[in-house]
Amino acid sequence: MSTLKKKVAEMIPGHLFIMDIVENIPQSKVTIIIDGPQPIDLQTTVSITKTVRNSGLLDEMYRDGFQLEVTSPGLDAPLTHPIQFKKNMGKVIKVRCIGELESSLVKIHDVKDKSFVGLSMNGVKSYLQFDNIESAFVEIKY
Image (cartoon, rainbow, N blue to C red; front, side):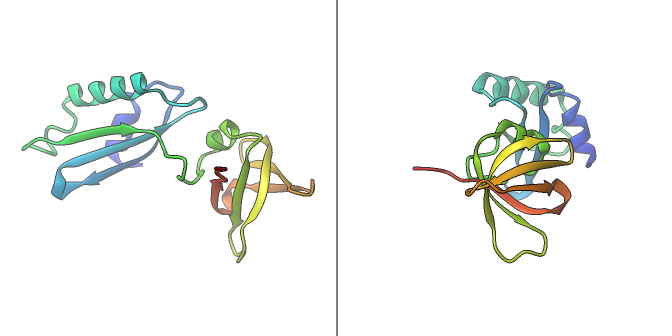
């Protein structure tokens, strides 16, 4: 974990975690992507933005000013953390494991620390280890 990520992690509420920090140095823009077991509301992102901005942490790195954005992953973002799988329990996801050519549709059934049970569309259980997942996306129904 980068030094910046560690320092920012100390500033956010304990039930949340940092998915990523994206720095666009030419545009002096920093985007902090957070998530947690519950949906992230606007008040939370505003509070974290103010805390990070007022900390002075980014002032040295961006002496001419910076744009700071705190956001949560969008609907089309991949699931990468066990808490995201727990938050989406009961939903259908498209998952592809390392070494597989095709993705599978499974409903998230039971989530543990290192794995989850997926139910195929015909009810067959599969046990998927997070370490073995190449990609996982919630299926969005329109």
